[in-house]
Length: 255
Image: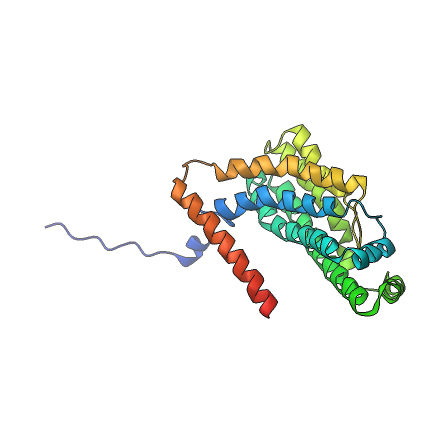
């Protein structure tokens, strides 16, 4: 008679060190591919909407007093594009890490830290514009001028805004994820000025335009990865994303 063999006991310490084999990845094809495609375009839209106004903060505050809807749209698009970049960067580093893990880790980490810094700056921009609405341009300009250079911990991330894109671009090229022209286009994001109430300069258009050249085709490629999903899944994803974003917006306004 054959004896039934008991299942072999699993060594927890061994299981913890063995790599997990899975076809899934974070943030996934849909989120990652959509972010790679949309984030650069939304960011570029924000940059172009404020192109007509002078670059420095007194003129930006004056522009808000005269064109509040347009400036709000410009800064909102810039912030939305910046936020959408986090899943885009994670998706890009996923591709780089297979061949150049060091460049992927450092480039991705520095770039994400830079995104945090720009989000912080956007919060200050919003407060400054509310000062214009409530107390006028003169007081808002004086307040911003006197508080410029005040200590905050996020200032330590300013270098990450600059170097992150360069390291990421080198990693994208050395890993073969992007060719040389598109890697250079990605690195041009280092030209995008940092800080509070920064308008649009010619280098801003070049930087965000380069980002579109680098990432939008990659986003389309990620969305079309094999196996191709059925059309109904794509339509369902677009519908869900639209409703979800609308719900977030409404709940945020009510809150």
